[in-house]
Figure (tube, one colour):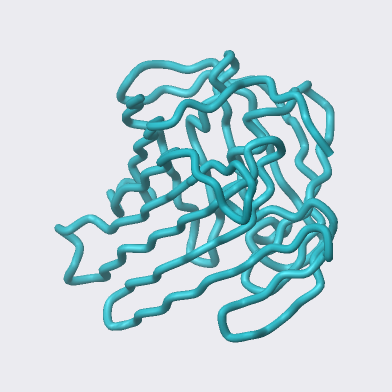
Length: 224
């Protein structure tokens, strides 16, 4: 399906966030549109995210997680997903190949799984919501594939709020993804995303509920 996007992403766009738990500065996250590339004869965006811990807290924990995705430019569906996890002494590297025509996904350990139609990873999920109309009271139904599981996610467009950040105040639209399944989008877990209510639709704030509390990612810098 070819879609008419509300915005056109700029190569080189870099969004920087602080990560906090209560009043504790945990670290930082960066979302970046690295480039446009050709992958399997398809024009793609090269997207990335980097999550790094606060060096002053390395005595408690240390992490440096990286995600890289090749997503089709015309609909932002992922074709290739790579994740590198470095958390203390734990190391892991995984690659995932999406075959949307066949509704299948293949992992680098040769596991082949069924894929729901128009499934996205968590990174392209965040970017895709920047491209569609966000009308208060509406629900956007999406499919997400994460950690070898398929999720049917209902994204409720909740309300408008003003979010204060270190780079200014933003008028935003709150989107609350939910699913009946266990995981980050469940009612016991949960995620909230505040998108700027303008033509750029930046994710200004992202809140993820964990077993021990909530982690808040707040925009602190924008570069193009």
